[in-house]
Structure formats: structure tokens, C-alpha cells
Length: 399
Image (tube, rainbow, N blue to C red; front, side):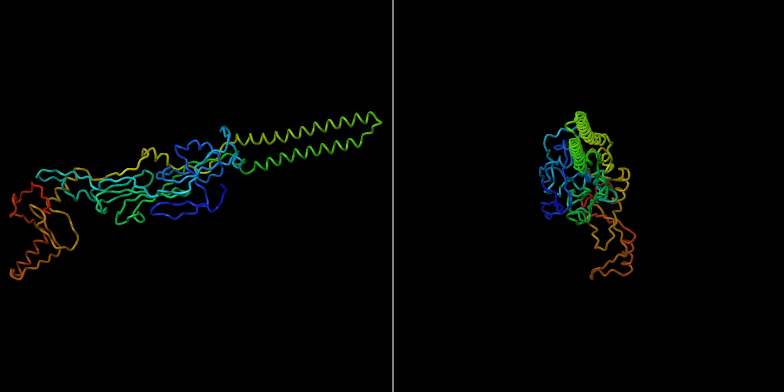
């Protein structure tokens, strides 16, 4: 395929259908095409090599193209009978992928009637409990369960083709962001793999034709000089003088010998130069990042890591919440009967509006407001099984 600057990567995804002009060609090397490493590793035209933790062969549209041996040269130690095939990337068919789905909460709820701190739902929300999406390449993406509108944590990845291998991780609909454009983690860690270049491959791609031309020119000049010397020698020969004929023959023989030496020297000089270039140590084009360590450290996995305080502190907070509830920090009409056994209520600036027929005196109304502002436990003595000041039972929600 002919090189061109308007190289374009197409995206055949439901969310992204526009192509992007890149100005470069991109190739895939994976387990199926790992034999190409011997070839691509000696190509001096490589700009960068990076690891993609998201995109795989089944996500890409590929084209088999020939490795241009005449342009980039043969590789020492690698047998190439014909132009080998490389996998050029034409399009990405699946740039948005779901990596996994997990339950939002992993609660342990007891089924008996007695109070247990594990039944306090507030303990399973931030800041006491939260989760992190970890690929061990970038900083973890922190999740607060109460900001996920569904019962599942649906983790997605978005990846495109570029010379840096950028990708992002996000949770669908987290904080109302359905496609991760705002709430997500874009990789900032480099994904580069080491790329080296050999002096011989550089020579093969940029100077080999010139070297061949120079060698051929030296050989042609040697032959032309020989013909000129022979012609001059024949013109100076006197057929009637035997010594003149003998001397002319000697000159022609020496000219032929020198010509052959000059041709062999031109060939030998080129061969020696190529041998020296092949023996020249390779130089680094692009050094590697710590991606190798990151992959080994993560065992090539992405994980949802759940974080929480210890059970000891969970139990302390659970007991506190059971007695005193947890702060609402909003203006609201208080429902003081939504728990079976009791409700603890504490207000700021309580407003109690009596019904017209009650006729509560103002001083009594003021005292009631002070009671609620200071905090009060309302026991529901009209319900079955309620015992005043007995906190041993699970104070479950009525609705």
C-alpha cells in the first residue's frame, strides 16, 4: 500500500462514528503476531511502541500489509524469503467496552430481632465505606456508593488509537455522567515500551542505495580507466619493434590487474562498512516507562477495591447511629414515626405549627421547640413489643 499523509483511523462504535486523521500508520503486535517482533524491532521508521490494556485484536479492523524489505532492509539473523505480513490498524470497532459489573453494596445484614451494628446502612456509605477502580497503572478512581443511581457498579473503558495510547475508565451514570466525559479517570502514566534502532537498519533504509551507487561508480571508473590505458598502450606500440610489442603487452596486463584490484576493493569496502554497521551496538529511540512493573504488580488485572474503616470503629459508629441517628443537614418535615421502636430527633430552629383546635399555650409551644432543638427520643409505645428505654432490638424502618 502506498504511503500517504492522510492516514485515517475510523471508529465504528455506536457512540463514536467519526474517523481521525493521524499522519502515521499503526500496527498491532499481540500473542498471535509476536513473530513480527523480530521484524518490527529492526525497523528504524518506528515512532513509538506502547502497551494497550484495553484494546484487543477482536476490537480492531486490521489489514495485512507487506513489510517492505527493499525499503527497510533485511534483518541479520532473521530468514526472510518473502515480504512478511504485518497487521495494520484501519479502524476501531469497539472503543467503548464494559469491563465488569459489581453490586453497589456488599452489606451483611442479620435476620434476628436484636440490634446489630451491621444493619446500619449509613456505615456502608462515604466516608466510612467507598470503592476504588484500580488498574495499577494510574491513580485509583474513587467511587462513593451513594452517588451511583443504580444497584450496580458498571465499569467501562474508552480507548482510542494515538501515539500515546490514551484511555479512560469510568462508571456509567456516576454523578449523572453517562459516558465518562466528566467523571472518569484518564490515564496519565506513560505506556511506552522501549524502542531501539540499529545503525545497519538506519543505513538500509536511508543510505543503502547511495552506497550501491558509489560502489558501482568506482567499478565503472576503474573499467573506464583500464580501457583508456589499453587504448593509449596500443597506440604507442611499434609492430616492427619486438621490445615495443612486449612492453605494450606488459602495460595491458598491469592495467587489467589494477582494474580487478580496484573493483574488488570497492566491493570489499562496501561489505566491510555493512559488517561494521551490523556490529554497531543498538541505540535507544524511546526508553521504557514502568509499565512492566505495573503489569506484574497487578497480575495483568483491573480490580474494584472496596475500602472501609475497621469493624471495631464500625461497631462504635453503629451503636451511636442506633441511638442518635445521623445528620440530615436539610430543611424538612420531620417524620418521627418511620422507625418501629423509637425515633431520635434533633433540630435547629424547630418550627411547630399547632392545629387550630389544640389551643397550645405559647410557653408550652416554646418548651416543645426547645425539646426538639436539644434532641429527644420519641418512643412509640402504641406499637407491639415496644419497651420504654429498651435499645436491644433492631429499630428497623417501618416503610
